[in-house]
Image 1: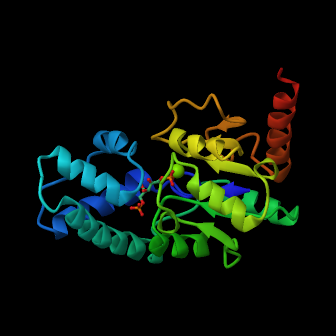
Image 2: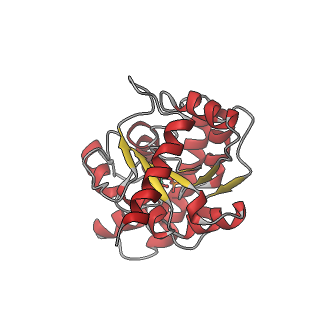
Length: 235
Ligand code: XBP
Ligand code: MG
């Protein structure tokens, strides 16, 4: 089971990353504030530093944009990390019981995210309660972010498994594209920002982990099996 982080393990974007970016703009004396709708468009650019650089260019900044974006992003990362350490970011409802069910069934878990290791690590420690997966691939470990498959390919490599043995869990179309390009069957658990995206390539699409049919290890195995069975019967 290879989990994405942002939007998948925790609902981080609207009330987590977005305010942290805005506070970093203020700290750098910039009159920039990303509102909820504008941030929806900006999410198409994966990776916080790239997102900042693209927006600065869009606003007419021309010189030293990459260095400025890197500075602002460092500040944003520190702000977001402190909020995580303060306990402000929590697991999506129903995720913890799923993790317990996967552990009980002996299914190995891993993480593949475009986020930055400095905040990803403390968040994973909280969500996985001290049993953090051994394989954690972050945006710091790759040169190309999602929808490029590099994070997933590296995760498979470190897990020493083929794509057929894995199931990815994602929340967004760019994450789904990354996992699919790595050849991995993918279960999507959508959220506020991604509910209307195209998930035609997914093995299963849900709006949450909980509800009347909570996602369990058995449900994950079933989705994985159905995905590969359907492919085997295609001409
Ligand atoms: C999530 C991202 C991340 C976060 C910000 O994509 O694009 O960049 O928005 O994190 P995914 P950083 O869930 O597909 O991995 O600022 O640390 O980049
Ligand atoms: Mg995501």
